[in-house]
Length: 84
Image 1 (tube, rainbow, N blue to C red):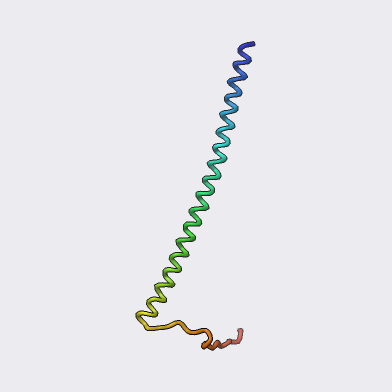
Image 2: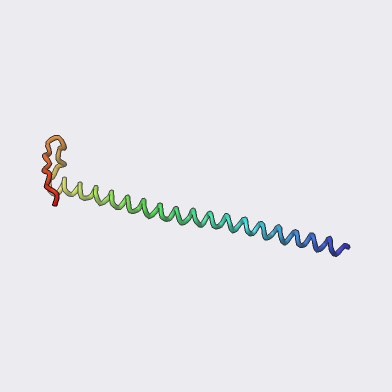
């Protein structure tokens, strides 16, 4: 009878450890997914910064080196081309 109780306690311990390991694995999966999403967000932000920096550089070069100014939209005429 005593060995049944000991066996039940040990089995309960094994089950408890397995449940804890499963919970940790689920948490690890969530963290891994969050990490992947954060890396994607960082890459997107770097791309956006790069694009904006390039646009700023082009505008600055056009103003300083070429003496160009941005056109006033109220003084700009648009020509509509016929569709082909």
